[in-house]
Length: 513
Ligand code: GAP
Image (tube, rainbow, N blue to C red):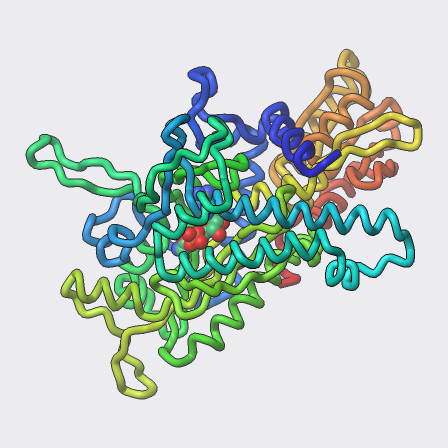
């Protein structure tokens, strides 16, 4: 199965098993908006709790808050979002479809890379064991031709991006013959800037109403509460404020399922520090966040850093933690050194003094900030796309299994009586369920054959299935079956809690950090 096919199958699986549904589906959906179903919301909650506890429980100097989506409109002027939170857009005059000019160019570059990779794959097939990829890339005429094309377009694109030269974006698109995938024509409008914030109005009468924005990041809710938290929590620098919440962006090109949505959720932490120490703290938080990811056991090789060449208006250093999604390595999280840009601007725009008095040096200054910012939905997609596997079993049957890290799995244990119409088996199974449900999210399942029930649980990633049979009524033991190995063991009912707990307890993950 190609990665493209795998992705389509994953999207269908997410819907079929209650993880993620297109929003407003009975009204034909709403573009780039998705709802989480019964399994998806459990998974999402577990991811959030792994992040929240790693931040606020493991660090005595990090506290959590929950600020509102609606904020004073001046905040978005101070933060630079009104003036600079834009994407370059271009319309095709024939299809009337709208695109991001930078994405059209990046896709074009991606296609050249694909061509090069195909040439390399052909070479590998032809030369077998004696294939030297480095030499092939440096000498094969087809590869060299495509590489030269890539370099020229890439250099022009980087220069245009740096200079914010919208006319040059259009020139590149026209010169490369990039056509609209719908109309197939190169009949483009000029490139314009498009602000990504959603606006609405607040106030009971239209005359008295003022325009407010749905927040495009949760971070500003932290900045404007800096003084409140610092004072009421008697926080000393360095300290952090963490927050999980919804953010909204009117993305021009929203695609790749929950990777880029118009309504999504962020987990952000602003770490306030003394100016001059930011590059040390930036390095520490880079390492800390990578450790949090790798600790989930989804393979260190599936993550990489991508340091930014072009920095956002607020940053003096920035990196992305990229994950190997089915459509390639893409940003999962950002770590940014935001200087005193935000606090400094809020001080200026609000007229309120936002400073820290350092009791050790007896001086006052505006703190600098290191930010870590991760999308909950992207994290859900990373976990699900890594977890999805189609396996052929020894007996020739096949199964779909989600190998979700056990502490994040929506359901931890399924309890099943061997037969549904045997009162004693059902009674004991329900008793076990009633006992375990205080510690773990459990599912009771009595329908269909045991084999079918195992498949259903594999498909939602349940780490354990417990089967109650006739012997259980006399020997006090049950069969416990593990998702990964499918190994079955006979264990005492009294041991179930500790066996399951060892694998699924979130604290085991947190202890390794
Ligand atoms: N406060 C900084 C900030 O918002 P960002 O790189 O724009 O930085 C941070 O966003 C993270 O939020 C991204 O790494 C990504 O995981 C997530 N994110 C951003 N836009 C998103 C979207 N449209 N849909 C889903 N997740 C998104």
